[in-house]
Image (cartoon, rainbow over all chains, first blue to last red; front, side, top):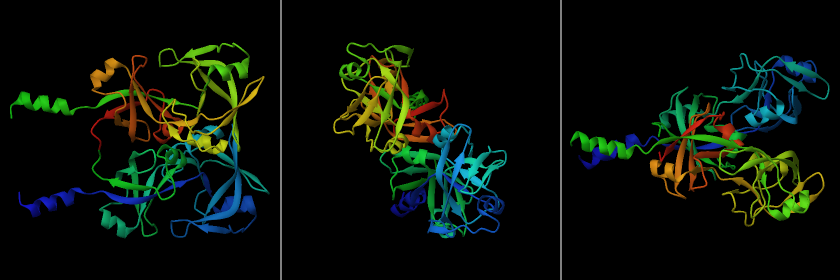
Length: 207
Length: 207
């Protein structure tokens, strides 16, 4: 085999790339109805700081989330408002709340459990919307091209935290609205020894 | 290449085996001094139920563990008594307690943080002993031979939970005192979607 052919072949097999990992704590997305009920008709959520994903932000407002067995106070709301309200928790949180949260892709809340939300002026029951977020990678179209990734592709990601592991079954989402980051929850963050700046390497062909 | 040579080669490369995974919740090991202080001179811990590892058991007695930021009540004590007292928590627990628990192999407590233990009759400060247990596999000598594993070897384990992942940097401990089980903590259990009976497959050659 000629050297150049070999190099070409090796390069074509190196389908591994590094991305930055972020850990998401428990948080709430609200729709217009819920904001009206919890903060008053026409209320606008206040931006506290921006998130890595363009247009997404942490709000100053906080809520208490209440389940049959426990509650969490001061839970952050992420803006902007959405079509559907949704509460994302870790499975550890779910045990504390006494709610069986299914692992779902964000937005896919059909048939998910209910929860109570409490603001300083109101207490409402969301009929559904409690999920543990399925781990995923947001990818910009440019990076998708560079990394040879397609929307809805499933990859593995080796995470270089202090407790190294390889996440299997990681969902890739490609959109012009995204910057490239992998998102995991705090159970997953603790399981891999995550700290800010932890990197992951995409493995496309499995182990 | 002859068929038999090929088969031999393939078999020698199949170094993957299934083992049962168990998730360990937060728990306490006590030495004689701590038992005397917490329950009275010469007190004997009461066996509630046996664990998978021969001779190890859950005690009826429970303790409250207290850190600078939070506490957990009704924490199980595992018997029999040990040379050193030790408190094993998840990193999620460690945040609640306000204690920076290092990831360590059980028994390796030099320089680890302190914690307060409270029984119905006493409250004592352990000068050290708080760890998050490093994930590991207990292996019987027979299984070690069958799986071709050596004591202190590091392997990967693919875990077939509802959120599949591959744990890297898994410590193998071989002893006549052991039955073959992989032990992970509840952060790791939640990260892989563990449920009772979840299986893992040892991968010896890396990904």
